[in-house]
Length: 247
Image (cartoon, rainbow, N blue to C red; front, side):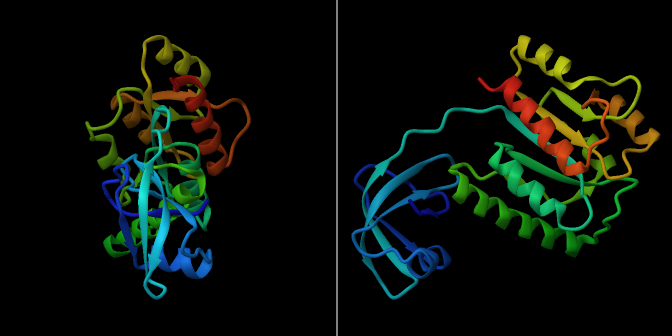
């Protein structure tokens, strides 16, 4: 069933909802929905409903009637992904797959060895693009709460933040790193269900950045003896965190 996004809409049982603009055009022109067809709608805040198309106006407006709210999705681990922006189009893939894997916040970072360099205008444009990718991924995979992709920020600024989960894990290639599995099992035993996963650039974090991360409370976590590409490390660490910390 086709899914439409309508920001912060109140999806109460039996109500009528008008969908306009790009979402309506995509449903009517691309998906070729017609009067009488059913369509699912979600509001980005966790709610979703199904309604039947009662009427259309041109190709840019449709009306759903008799909405039937859907049950909320089961809760998942609260994962914040912070990573140095990889080169090329890899960040687009990472954002898409991270959303599909249940990540709730993505924080792009500029570290010492990050190849990508952005000024304020470029950073804002990138964030806008990545949030579009988030929306498309949510529509495809059935996630009803829109994850957030923040504007890229420096590694130093990120380490000063106090608004992130208590469990802070820095995927690391250093001798003192403990296995990620061990750190996650300890966290689960302590009743924790949220974490930050911090992942470095292609050239890894510098020794000074590792030291700064530890000073800020980030535990060095090993993903094993094999050196992984950035995107592979993201998917492996995220899957491990979901497996360990999901309710």
